[in-house]
Image (cartoon, rainbow, N blue to C red; front, side):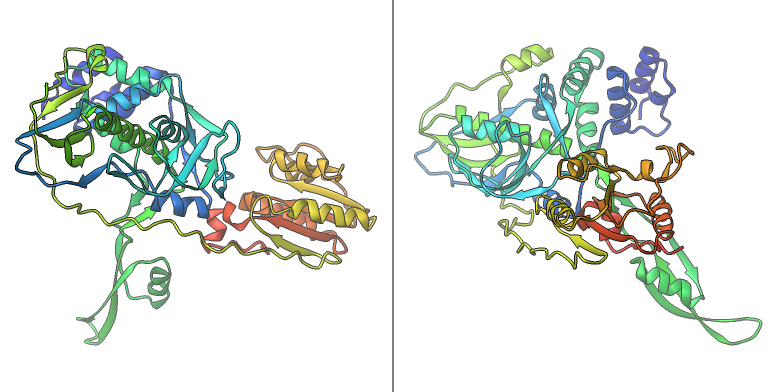
Length: 477
């Protein structure tokens, strides 16, 4: 491939990032995104198990559907396309906050959104002029657009987000790409796809004769091929195991929610085409950013001036060659069926116990109220400052972070003396599953110094993918 493109970027930015021997326009796009916005990374989303399952099963999907058939009296056929749909989608993010999900954002089942809601909403499939908008989890600006278009929909649940990305970063990226590059789509489209990287592929394979290593490989999900070979020296048959690595592994964090926002805006662009199509035509098919239809009468075909970004923004819909749409080849998406919620039961509060349950189920409040009513000498702690503040609000005035309790700083350096617990009868450990395992080991070892101390562990196991996925850590060491 011609090196003129990256060489041009190298001259403009004076960065070796653009001197690729193996051209990758997605990587070039990401480097441009960083350089143009003066940043070094793009904040990623992370998920607890329940949210991850919904995100992976109900991501927004571009519209694709075969609709009506051509009728004889409809002699004129048309195709309308939204020019540079995903590029303009990113440009339209200017002035918006793009929600991203954190590990502590939970999926809330219900059909009533909070006031000033910000985040992602799971809705059932709905329709606009006969075109299906699939079941999916969409950002709040998409939901606002459905309301604006008068589209009725059914909310099944939502994830309220506290963190966000400044949408102006994307607007600036698109604007600058159109100024700098002769063919901006060559970079913008691969960049968009790169945001949807959810898996780390693995092609690691090895051969072993050791049964213990074979068993480890089986537990880790490797494909095991059993074979035999003859030892040339001893002349004996031996078993050998060919262990083939897992095809892919889900990343703990990714930019897929930004990708979902782009796809959602692309759907909005397609809905805008459908809105402008005359009422008396028959829509025969939808393909991503194109709408195909037939008409009894001739219709003036829209044209786009593609000479610059502003002219495209002024009139983005253009006429394209009519095409028939085949049957959808992607797997049909099932309607969302909520899992039965398991009610938590509180443990024996007269002795050390663990109480696990989802956010908002009153674990912290109930435990605090009971121990206060018993007149116990209580101390509260958590890895998170926000949880410490909640314990104080529930009446556990002597509450602190685990770092503070152990007398260490955030970077594990020596800070102050550890809190003496010999006169404390009970300790509440809230948001247990957010504690990093190295800190957990130090914490557990310290609590062992006080054998009469009653420990009350509270948390939601879904908030730690490492623990809830079954990869347990031995805290007894």
